[in-house]
Amino acid sequence: MAKRLRLAPRSLKKQLLLSLLTSLVLVWGVTAYVNYRQTRDEITELFNAELAQSARVVHAFVENMLRQRALTKLWEREKTPELFDTPILGHKYERKIAFQLRSVKDGVILRSESAPEFALSLVRNGYSETAINEQLWHVFSLSSENGEYVIHVGQRDDIRRQLVESIAGQQIVGFLIALPILGAVIWWIVSRTLSPVNRLRGELASREAGYLQPLSEQSLPDEIRPVVQQINSLFAMLEQAFANERNFTSDASHELRTPLAGLHTQLQVAQKTVDPAMRAQAIAKAQQAVVRMTHLVQQLLTLSRVQHQAGIAMQRVDAYQAMADTIADLDHLAHAKRIDLELQGEAGLAVEANPQLLQILLRNLLDNAVKYTPEGGSVRASCRREDGWVCLTVDDDGPGVADSEYERLSQRFYRCIETANTAEGSGLGLSIAQRIVALHGAEIGFAKSALGGLQARLRLVAADGPT
Image (cartoon, rainbow, N blue to C red; front, side, top):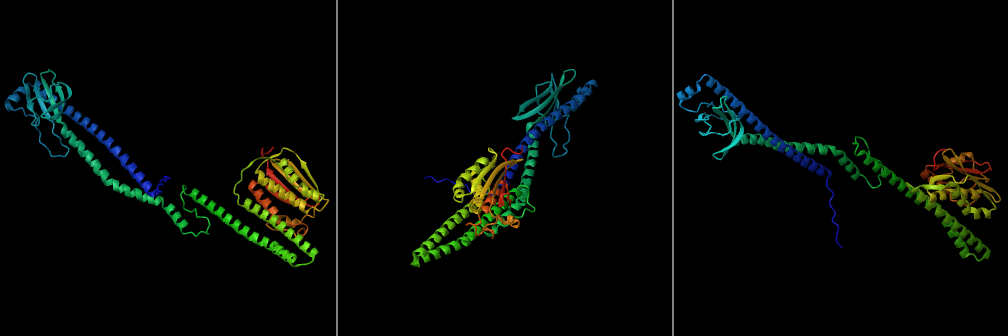
């Protein structure tokens, strides 16, 4: 079987640094290239404008000389065409420009030292490019008003490229110098930004397995605070789960110890006695202990299951029908005690609930009422609507409890002194009911019943909201 390759988890810090530096280099590289192209185009336009301007200066000079009829005399007197030479100042941006004055009839009659002896271009007006001695020249030409003379102003292409390369080189040097500095700044910013993550990692690493106190949210950035809040919620759930486990273990060991000891005692009596009546009595008591333990274990398991549930699947449930089904399941217990078990109220009232947990809840309430109602008594269940609630009540005519005991009825293993000896019980039924009520966002309360006993009043949110 081929093994699936697992990619090693990447460092968030390294990933951020690599992404930021790569993006910086790419963006800066593209920007440098665009700047280079724009600089080259701007320098070309600048030199072309300089050529045109220089040509117009020479044109003005030539036109003035022609009006004074001094151009021919000047040329004869100097006996040299190198009229336009200018001293070089030695500035780093100084570039030589070649000038020519060409006669249409006689050819080049005046030129600068940097210009060739033959015409730079055959174009009479405008820009042109000419290859001379394997050098590319950019030339601007301008003819005189009488058309007899043409002024050529030119510049070699390599001079232009040297300037562009000089400017581009300076940009590259600046980029190379700034890149490590920016890299260090980015590294510092990323390290400082991720410092809360490192502190959180250190705090989690230093914790012991059983230490589930919430993490501090002080000075945390907004992006990390929700993560810490979720971790704290997880800690709270784990703490509750561990507490439930401890409670379950403690409760089970405490509550099972007595019936197990009684069972062991009754079995010893049955084993050692020779009296058949005493043996039968011991076996009957042992059977009662087994029944009690069975009920206790079932209640403990139910309590553990509902306590460990953080969320439940809800659906639309007919509350009246759920109550009727539960009464049908307990009818044999009521019949055995000749108890009149009655259901009143409105049919078709729907609530949002978990059907299985609602069945356990109603069964515990009704079973509790039937258990503590004396033989020949009455248990009355009702279902009706109150605003946005569906109210389910269970009334019995049993002995009831004192008003001061109502708030303690939902405590685990709590049993009223007045009714503890009336019926067998574990003291967990109403604890289970209270937990299921909390999971449903419902309400439960206890009061004195109109029948004289205890009333359990359950309110569930109606599925269709308030009327």
